[in-house]
Length: 332
Image (cartoon, rainbow, N blue to C red; front, side, top):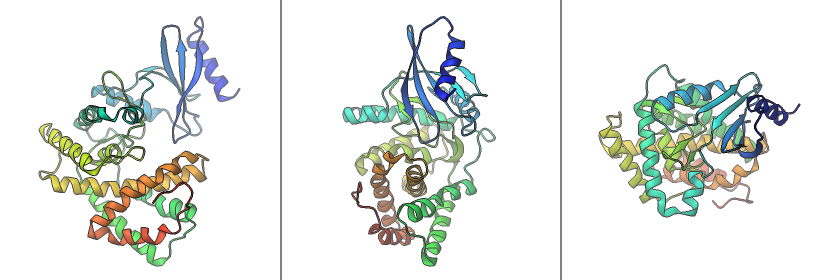
């Protein structure tokens, strides 16, 4: 039997006397797929995570940790770890991205709710709960940029000078990231993983949670690859977070300029990684849609590199790469 047939068979063992239908709900950047299960009087979400490619246990662990922190995550209705299936409560059909695109006037309230939820996640932080976002992991993510974006996407193998620039700048970035206070990090806290729900937001795709830099999820949220806001508006939202975090006694820096610098430098790490990840998704996994989001990510990256003197060598390297960028689908 194929995966869909196996899933249907498992659901029939759970609901032998109830008719149900399956329809695609979403797919993500991994090998997981999600289906909406329509039963009489309710809908649920079935996760299909092929066990040879995905492990459901980190999802179950993070769901338990976040639920205890009063975070609105899906309830686990049933599980079959041997076959790689989970049955989850349904958090609805409207993502933040859809809501913000159709009614941008609601952005302030939606982002305030997202900030409140992030504060609760971070306030629950403790060691030995999730893996640490350590130097090795952060560094391996940065290497996706030369390996997949430069070499595979642009067909530019870094020369010795470029390798040296990347080495020096990567170390500066990592030093900043690792000096930041460490809290629970969702790791993809953005508009496609936040659902308009009650209580708001519903949060999904948290299986990669780690203990890491306090600004990381803010970068995901406010330097989002899928929707962009004016810098003045982002600055206002970051200030609101910082004020809330201080009142909640989270370990943010006492002066806002230092905190904002950390936010920006964390963004450089994430955006270098994302350019590599989007390239890998295209060339390795045949997921082409992410290419259209690269210009937004590159715009974030270039603006920050041009703002800080220590990052100017990386800005110049990006200038060298610009004329190598495929023209189709790009605006920068």
